[in-house]
Image (cartoon, rainbow, N blue to C red):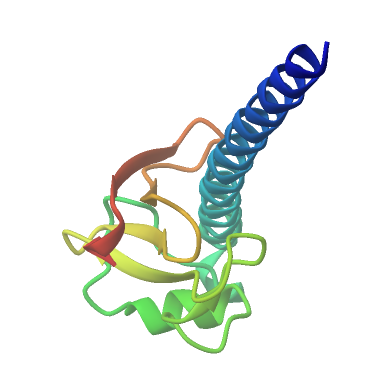
Length: 146
């Protein structure tokens, strides 16, 4: 009877250990996915703010439409129009330490927001291609692309 009890004790210890390892792996995967989601949300949020400024008349400080003339509009101008101090190092809360976003002008005609870093395994780019809610496109890339 003593050997059976010892065997059950060892077996239950092994099972608990395996369950703990599986739980830690699931938590890490969930944390990474949450960071990716936070980066995506922040990029789309900034792109939506840019879209709001595009819909504003130029006399009131609005931005040119995507595909329009951005030759005299810099990424800093875009950031300032939506109330940000700089076009780089924009915090991406919820994505972990060192997660940030930056604003750029793609091909001198479309504003884009790229977010990376933190606990995320990918970077996300949100590009404003028009003035409606369907005109924000997202794409994903490697983490080191920011």
